[in-house]
Image 1 (spheres, helix red, strand yellow):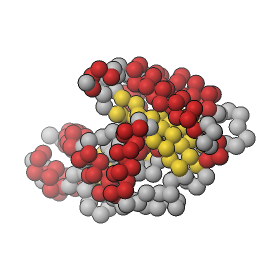
Image 2 (cartoon, one colour):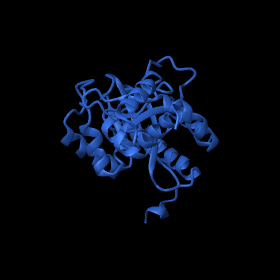
Image 3 (tube, helix red, strand yellow):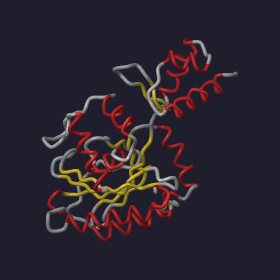
Length: 256
């Protein structure tokens, strides 16, 4: 088995593990010498194909995988299906609208639409390919909230919850309670938790198996999501996310 084949085996193992994995485990399970695993992981790190957890020296799939997977999602018409709905929501709300995909325990923006003529437009964190924090953004919180509890606890515990603003939830127990609320409501709101002055609303997108794989979100100035229009905006986002889910083959009957 050559180095390329061994690299593929390591990437496949990390993908199937759906958690961070250490060199010892990779060596034991794949029957590769530790020195070989270490050398290959360093090469993969250089190309961002894997990420290394600083505190534990364990590895997970890297963000570069997203770029390679874009063609896969395009072949499934995922973004082609979602994009017209994104544009419709953007026009209806006059707010930045985007899709957040769940990949290796992280949210990644894979498509976004910004109002073309908006004097109030400001730089946001929703650039395509950018990682979106899982605990202080509506688009990632709503995906995390719909994962199994064992995964929620694992993800929350593996890295510190940094405080971005005064509204950021940094206590794991409080965050779990917040996520349970989100799951029950069917949508998430970010109330200036990641960026001061910015609010967001997001709803889950489910695949044909009923698994939450992404979210549809809108984001903009907090003053544009007041008590006067928040109800209407929530309805637009949740209904549009359901529309995308339905086009992906999701049916509520599969969860019964």
